[in-house]
Image (cartoon, rainbow, N blue to C red; front, side, top):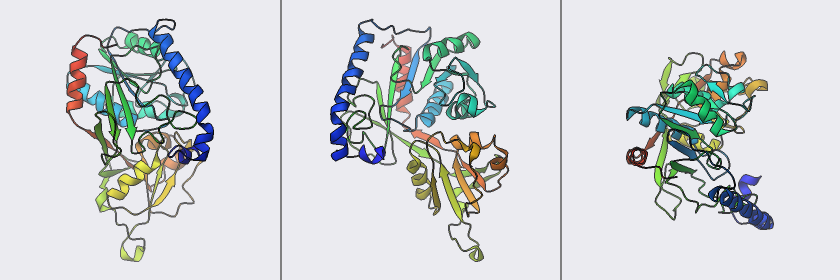
Amino acid sequence: MFARIWMRRGLAACLLWPLSLLFRLAVAVRLALYRFGMLKAERIRVPVIIVGNVYVGGTGKTPLTIWLVEALQGAGYTPGVVSRGHGAQNSGPRAVTSTSVPQEVGDEPVLIAQRTHCPLMVGRNRVAAAQALLILHPQVNVIVSDDGLQHYALQRDVEIVLFDARGAGNGWLLPAGPLREPVSRRCDFTVINSPSRAPVWPRAAIQMRLIGTVAERLQDRSQVMPLASLVTAVDPEKGGRRIAAAAGIGNPERFFGMLRDAGLAFEQIPLPDHFDFAEFSFAGVAADVILITEKDAVKCLHIAALRDDPRLWVVPVTAQIDPMLAEQILEKLRGPPTA
């Protein structure tokens, strides 16, 4: 419901607008308290890069975080990642590996660990998580925070704010709009996760595209088939395969749009972000192939009924971004602290 309200300044949004003014005031007061030292912001011993968003919900931070970690590794850095760990069972710092259980540490951290193999710690308190990570891994010389843009207790050297094709919605703050902070907030880089350049932004923005070209069988990720090889005809007598696609991410349409751009026709199964597959089954889905996201795959792999479903195929995505972004970030890291 709110997703529709937040995309335009209709009657419902206008009725909520006075509340958004109060929210904006609260945001401004909180930021001022940190700026004037009434609330303490702590600096850790290594540079910190924040990957976050002001649009509530998912905009593609995890693929951007993976891209950034790999870029840092390629430049000779030893990065570590801290994350909130949505759905994590404990609020204190907890180490994450590629074999961690998503229900205990969150789905996105496990995916990041699997893709980057870098030290990773989750925890509600980003400062405590970063400090714990550095104790366990003293070789780490830069921290990337997956989300945490509004976690001002952790001082940062670089801020990257990510939007997707929804832009800033109607441009209003919660609850009248989708924004946690004004679009005009200070940041070092703005990235737009969209296959097109729309919408137009008041400041320079860097485009990011998510590319997926193959599917990997959930049972055995070494079994790979190109997406282009999937026949979209529904009639089995003509050699076609019935295809479905499921996505439990912040914006499922982003995943579906990528598959349509690859030329596929399929049944769409949109699911809530961080969807819990524990009580879910694809048994009622009439499809020969079911395509799922990597984020959903880390959870499905721990559920026998889904792991053993031969129809489930994972579509890994890679972020394509202008390499100049990495160069500019490295430039900032080599210079004096900016925050």
